[in-house]
Length: 324
Image (cartoon, rainbow, N blue to C red):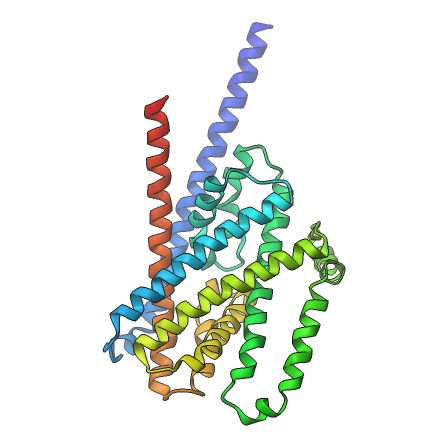
């Protein structure tokens, strides 16, 4: 009996070691892929980058980075709130660290690494990964909805006479927006997608809860849009009246980037949308410059967030270990 238990313990230990080895290998592969896709992007655009006019307002850039930091940290808290609603949450601090540490996963096509990087923290806490996966889909849906609403509002400020004549259409679209975010409607389309992917993708949430979450995402998108506006202001003299338009274009570019599953973090796709939108309010050379700098701005901010989250996590573990 004792030998049997020893064999069982050894088998479990070997399986755990194998699992840790596989996970470590995946993380290394993951980082290599991130470096590859980011490096390829900047190498492909190096000629444009080195010929840019670098007469920048560094004060505005600093403020824009602070806005982006606030947006991402709040986004991590919203992720935690969604997991709480779906009863698969871990501690708030651990959830924020897991979220920020997963950021590099967005630079690999398919978004699957984004979810995989968060799973270990939830698996360790004994939370069902099926529920965590549903929360991941819900977070992406709410991100899209928040960006879409920001873009709809920005239509009132579009520098285009044609759109000004059809402002009533924008009002109708906003009303339809709040109708179509009903869980029954969203779940109808998710069931169709789930049949193709052979996964249960329905969101287990009542309309008031979903409405509250979407409104929180919309508010957070205003923070992200404000950050991008400050970045644009650092390069080209945009006016305060163009704030929502610039933010809306940023929201639209993010929507298209997320939907472009073939492009890691929407590389190239997002910049193309930004360029097209900014061309309506500034010369071409500035639109091109800003669309490329926006990627550098976002990437630098995310590198600091990832490094900061890993450092804070290490320090916290060290303090806990020293105190025990």
